[in-house]
Amino acid sequence: MQMTWRWYGEGNDSITLDHIRQIPGVEGIVWSLHNKVAGEVWEEEEIDKVMDLIKSKGFNADVVESVNVHDDIKIGLPTRDKYIDIYIDTIRKLGARGVKVICYNFMPVFDWTRTDLYKELPDGSNSLFYEKDAIVNDPNIMAERILKGAGKYTMPGWEPERIAKLDELFKSYAGVDEDKLFENLKYFLERIMPVCEEQDVKMAIHPDDPPWPIFGLPRIIRSRDHIKRFLDQVDNPYSGLTLCTGSLGPNLLNDIPSIIREFHDRIYFAHIRNVKVYENGDFSEVSHRGKDGNVDVYEVLKAYHDNGYTGYLRPDHGRHLWGEEKDCRPGYGLYDRALGVMYMLGVWDSLDKRKGGH
Ligand code: DNO
Image 1 (cartoon, rainbow, N blue to C red):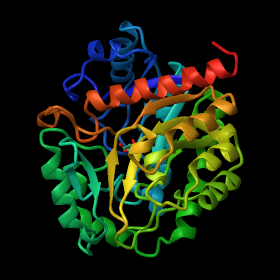
Image 2: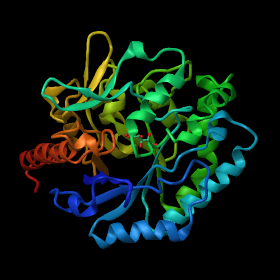
Image 3: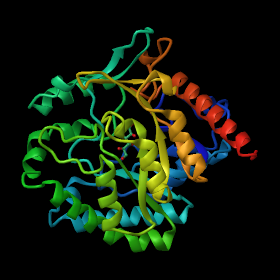
């Protein structure tokens, strides 16, 4: 397992690479060109600038999260080929520079969705929260809440220029049901797979968050059966998973350790986050400690360890602690994620020792 940390880039993150160097065990920085909207060309100089900076601080830059997929590809419009060509160009440029994994998602319109970015927890910290009943019919209300909460930072997937065209976007998804979305995903992957093979770049899809359809939009990577269908329909080792425990976790029927055991050889990137699910279906994001929520993080790590996982792993969202929410990106503060790294390394090291490893 290789521990990594998601960083949004200079001037775009409250945390610096120098901060991250002081967190034990972090080997790689998960990065992206966050100024790019889906479908935009990634220039070589821009890529080199970020990768050089990351490497100059002693980290690897093997994982990119995300290269976003244009909605025309998800909808299956005739213009999709133009956007797939641009995607291929980006894979080539990244592969040529040694990038190993691209994390992406295939969620229509929205990336992850929450109703509250700073919900107070009993210990006085706060975190991202999902209130089932607050997801009413009008997605504009939700988008407004997110944009307001994000403050000075742009949230990937929630770029104001996209959100401004929400009604139009929703209209273009009419007729795109679960089967159609699967079909469009297959089309996309079949076109890019030869380039991934040639460049040795693995595509790792991120599950849908939350793991159920919202606002009438289909969501297709949300359970063991959906994952199986996804992996079977393009059965190529270059198409795999970003297994995110925080995304699958709010559906308590998802047995995450067993999903990991079943699909471990197609998991290239592990996102670990804990969620506490309430009786009415609302959920809060909580500390990485298994006991604090419904994700048994020990069993998750054990499932990876038992299968000799050598891929990338990162702490996912954390709570905002000690007042840091005044400046940090929602879910991406320093303290709780750093505590998460230490908790996970503690579990991992003890699993190593038990196995007689080092
Ligand atoms: C949430 C993240 C997601 C993820 C994208 C991948 O914080 O895990 O936004 O980056 O879904 O495309």
